[in-house]
Length: 399
Image (cartoon, rainbow, N blue to C red; front, top):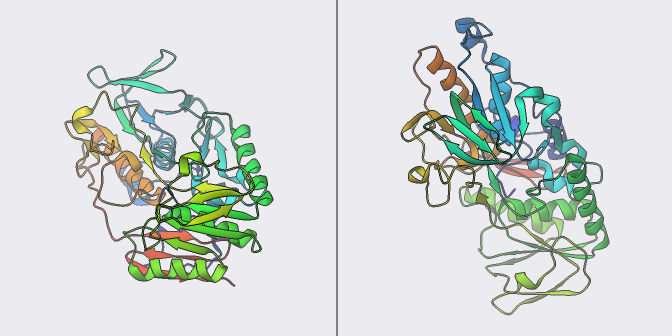
């Protein structure tokens, strides 16, 4: 997807090298949603070494900015260790956006992808927008004027992109669910659907629509010749193309849409004409954008300008600490690391950071994080999937 992850990722983390994931992608997608915020237990050897709870003084308080995959994973682990924390997010619910594209075509699925923060974390959740960070005073400032003191800070602000792959509006959970139900209805009305962008989100979106609605005409326009993401093996990217063609998706590769600003997106509008820079014209009743991911840096940009990479992510050391700030960590999309921006990696970051916070409190050596062999999986409709686990290709075909 646009966030470069897939519904299989919760399974892939534990898959053996070279494994083929055999369960249907749709089933994996649903099951991963229902358990997304359950506290993950710390490793047994760590519990034996430290005990299941730590003896901490009142000065310890971890503030987590951002409740995406990395932030909620960190919060769940801190909760399991009984380390005091506050999770801050503008919205009232976690969105399992790995499953967002399925929720765009299947009525009733969106409800499985949103989970209330308060129901999961209780008083340790604060809904609000971070407008400033003062590292000297160890304070996080919210837009309503509240200041949150921290002993340790985890920045997990994630990234934004176009709907439906990402949900960017600050509205309540029920309204967010309804937005996806509305999208399902718009897609049902359209006979000719154009998907713009052939990265992870675009190929998954096209596959989801064509799987759910085989009779609809689905066209995918991509500015490059190869589909999906550059980090993937050539064989995997080729299989993505073959799956789409087998499903009946029309591919326009090496072409860029020239009139996107004049198009109505995510809504049924009969007989729109989409033009490319090469002069190709495509008639469509609905246009869906799957392009452009932007790091959410507004919460920290003014405080950590010297640590900002060109894309707005934060430069970190091998312990995922901000340069010059040993009690401040960055995880997930907002960490400047040489690896794809994926939910899977955000979870790995969270584990390293929580371990390092605990180790710093118990005077133990810090863990290091090194990007490993790529695990990157794409759900190509309910029963098709392709990707690679630990750098090796794997394929799960329809059955």
